Amino acid sequence: MESSDIVILSAARTPFDRFGGVLKDIPSYQLGAAVLREVISRAAIADEEVEEVNLGLCLQVEAINDTNIIGRQIVLEALSHEVLSITIDRACCSATTAVQYTERNLRLGLTQLGIALGVENMSRVGYHTSPRTRWEGGRMGDLVLQDPLFRLGYQRFNPLAVDAGEVALEYGVSREEQDDWAYRSQQRYQEALTAGKFLQEIFPVFFTVGKKNVGLDADSQPKADITREQLGKLSTVYGSPTVTAGNAPGLNTGATGLVLSTRKKARELGKIPLATLVNTVSVAGKPREIAVVPAPAILKSLQSANLKLNDVELIEINEAFASMPLVSSKILASKTGFPLASIHDKLNVNGGAIAIGHPVGATGIRLIMTMIYELQRRGGGYGIAAICGGLAQADAVLIKVE
Image 1 (cartoon, rainbow, N blue to C red):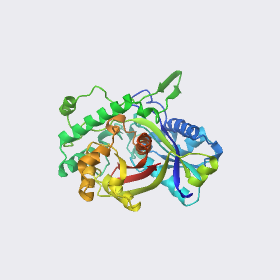
Image 2 (image 1 turned 90 degrees about the vertical axis):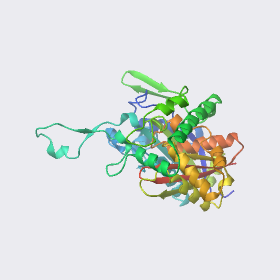
Image 3 (image 1 turned 180 degrees about the vertical axis):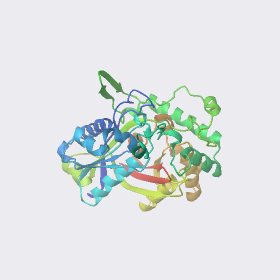
């Protein structure tokens, strides 16, 4: 093993809460500080060993409640004031980009041990006014509020649900297939939960809000009693031809974290890594093709590592909508000649974001840790995780468990 390898020493996440759940009033910096303390504890390293913290956080409009620079505020909440930090927004790719920044600094020799975090509290996103309000204040007239979560899109582009649904149909993925996948996600999650698989990654969290104590020890988004018939009866949203509240995830809250180091540093500390981080890659495509871009990210990662798709034991493609894993897996089958059914056998085996939830700035790291722990249960091997981000960005992360 090369001493310059990048390895993962620990991984953890909070439970993912539903929209308006018990964690709705907990600031991102408190969620991030909780997971930061947890991954340091799990790695059994001294605080002094941490050289930097890279944080993925998508919805900066929530961070403004605490005057932004949430990465720095997390460090001050949980670590030494001397630890460097940065806050990154690449939409849903924010957490994987935090991993990529951490990896890059380790490979460049700028650091020996760093931490990648992801956090989001979508319940805490408030309404805001037009930028003109500052200059028009005091004049007569109504004050108009805007909702950053409404339509889940961008001012100059379609709502994401529209793009995801239209592109799915263009690739021959029907509404029925998307509902089938959503039902599969819920069922696979419940099977994994019953088997105790999420006990490795989740730790309980407790906070004080005013005079009240709140806590959460399990994901609150999953719908154990949902039926396929119920999913089929839901109306589509935001003008999408296929996307519904049932074949998309919720607006969730949660935090995730990984401790990464060089293999040389891990040996010096006497640590046995959870996994080797082989590579992280990024791609971008046409803005409407968010359902497409996980596939080229996966292919780029595999090519960089001189691997084929059949060398990989597990695949995670984030279920930003059901169309993402369905469209991207069809593209992978077409490009590699690997049977689509065989790809699906390896894909999101314990369910995905439709069941678990999707706190957008945190999910990328959740995919990685879910894959690590499942590979451990299966005796090791390669796993690859991909996630799309708004306006058709995507990251892929390739890992190996011995």
